[in-house]
Image (cartoon, rainbow, N blue to C red):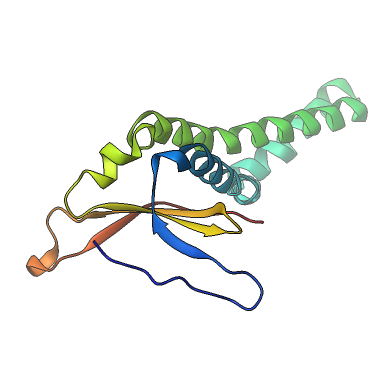
Length: 157
């Protein structure tokens, strides 16, 4: 198993070590919050898609033409943006739920008891602030040993 030296920064000391079962609650929290940080960029990406722009412009314009009400069009845009925000959240929420029901339900079994795999946590001030899992690549090219990283997340604090 690879060993990592404790790294010290002048401002924030941190230590990388192997996962322990007592870390589970904080690991889940760091992972969940880390994945939620992708929601705003997913929402912005969705807003830039041509289909989304057409929807945001076309539906309210059609409402104005049919009803003659600009207020109805503004309310429609508000609800469309709210719907898009919920749609941007959904894939990340499903991904987190899937991970928490599969490999992250028992990290020791999924990573620490698998030959060549590991799960590390980064600590700062006695708190888990980062996580990463690694498993060997099943069929690496040219028979070389390679690791694939999973569940990489770092606290924004």
